[in-house]
Image 1 (spheres, rainbow, N blue to C red):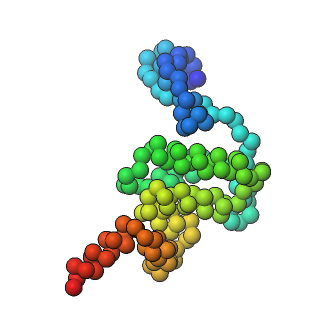
Image 2: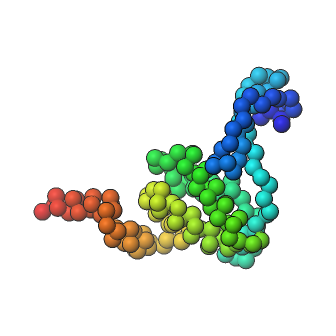
Amino acid sequence: MKCPFCHVDNDKVIDSRASEDGVATRRRRQCNACLRRYTTYERVERTTVRVVKKDGTRVPFDRTKLMQGLEKACWKRPITDADLEALVTEVENHIEANCESEVESRYIGEIVMEHLRELDQVAYVRFASVYRQFKDARDFVDELRPMLAEPGCAAQRAARSFSDGDR
């Protein structure tokens, strides 16, 4: 493994443990040349699932691209990197288990939104606004309406207490 700092291919593994519920192996390494430490992850090589985009083009599934989209949706939200890694792993496992060689991007988006809705409602609405290409505020309201109708919804309680304070 080449060191990401000095690019010398001479390191040793200091620590190795299962990660992401046994789906990956996390290895802590130390470069023998510059003595700096870094972390690598080892995963089983999977068959390449191709994503069919809206325009009909086909591209390989890319967990990094999915992670970047989630990081944007979760920006400044109380969501850890571990939460995002777990979500991406769940989506990846779901696709691997339920899809043959191709999956529509729409299907991936729906799975992600399902998980995000449970994780953080603000991140869910952010992701949905880009994924579903909201045009105006009415689209946001339409997306929020079912969440606000759920019993025990924090946003519903806040809206009620706000309107009660206006009286």
